[in-house]
Amino acid sequence: MAQSALAAPALLLHGGNLPGGESVSAADTLQERLAFDVHRPQYHFLPKANWVNDPNGPIFWKGYCHLFYQYSSTIFPQGPKYWGHARSKDMVHWEHLPMALAPTPGGPDKDGCWSGSAFINEGVPTLIYTGVLPQVQCLATSDDDMTTWKKFSGNPVVGSPPDEPAVTGFRDPSIWREDDSWLMTVGAGFQGKGGAVFLYSSRNLAHWDYLGPLFTAPPFERRDSARMPKYEPIGAGDMWECPDFFPLGQKHVLLVSSQGRVHYFVGTYSHRKFLAETQGLIDGCGLHYASKTFADGRGRRILWGWIREGRSKAAQNSAGWSGAISLPRVLSLASDGTLRMEPLPELAQLRGRRHRIMNSEVTGLLPVSGVRGSSLEIQLTLDPGEAKECGITVRRSPDAAEETVISYNAATQDIVLSGAHSSLSPEAIGGTYRTPLSLQSGELLRLTVFLDASVVEVFANGQACLTGRTYPTRSDSLEVGVFSREGRARVKSLEAFEMKAISRDRLTK
Image 1 (cartoon, rainbow, N blue to C red):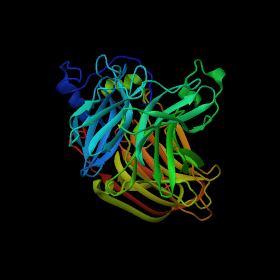
Image 2 (image 1 turned 90 degrees about the vertical axis):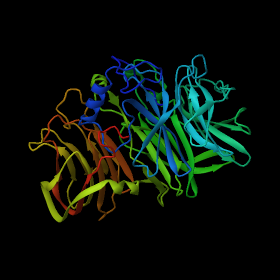
Image 3 (image 1 turned 30 degrees about the vertical axis):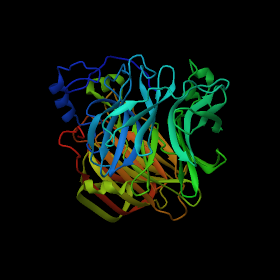
Image 4 (image 1 turned 90 degrees about the horizontal axis):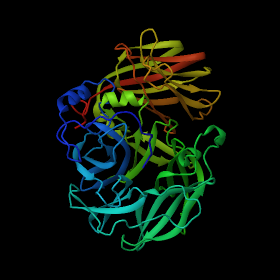
């Protein structure tokens, strides 16, 4: 489970009772506020209110994609974590189901049910997850439609980390079947050395044998310890959260979350060891975290992530909600062994009215007439020409006092998402994020940009992704423009679609 800092007053769940049983008297007020909140996404998945973080245990079962997620009925300070649960026929429209897991008083998960995975064992839906404190691994099973869950009486099935020196953490299990055994990875690391994924095996899911590290690596970036007031394993790169290990094409892929971002390794798996050959980022922005994948009913490998907020804790508390689940991405491998990511094609069913421009030269800013809004999909094909920088501005006010900028920098060969001027609110935390994108001579820049209220998701040439948050204060911060700097570029095509909401009231029912 991805960890978070705790502070400030709490806000309770709207409607009915909290998971703990206490009633909520301000239900209507909060529900109305959420329904009219202009920063609350309309087609990304969220719980009905409050806090969401890691996607957990996505699985395809009997015609449905089931998505679990880390949920808390308070924002700051956060209460213990539950497993929320929803299902979908198309991964676009969702049906909320009862909470799958709640802490058991006096049990090994008394302080929270943290992240894990779902799988099918001899026809029985099964979850494996981390209980805290201390961090241990637990099992639960369900009835056939996954609406009622029962915890294993022998929990925890793994009661402590292995006897390794200086282990920094022990959580977020992932599981698969191999020959006549179940194999399980657990996120971990070693102080001063970097991250690790521990590997376990079991014949019956109740008793597990430690096989050693599946893979280890040093920190992704070295940070000045003198500037860190207190040692923190994730920030130091000595702890890997949310490992996800799976076959893709002729290779295997390992995802880990550490130092604020999700990293991937592609390589070969043999004799229960993983050898990495290439590596990269799932997303260049630290606001996309804790990625988790599953194979859908068509055999596609689908990735989800937690979209963090980019505003103050006080603003999140005041809003009554925090976080969202990313749009689903379809993964594949490029010929050079790197990971490719494209938005799920089923999202196209949300497209409404279309706007289009073709073959337009760009010198400076080219406003896109007729295209404006906070709920859009934009597909831009741009010839960078001799421009040193080119791209698109969204959520732009007429005087550019507020705007979010997505650009390609030819000199650094980066895709950049700048939220430095995305909001005039002092509660917004604007940032600039970048991720590598190397275009060959004559290659076109192909951007797909999803705007959904405060969420921006960018796909670039199937190779790079950036996820940002934008909280404009002005009602006219809706314009779109294409731009070039220090040279001409050319719009080969731009298609923009007004996107439909997946519920009437921003509650994503």
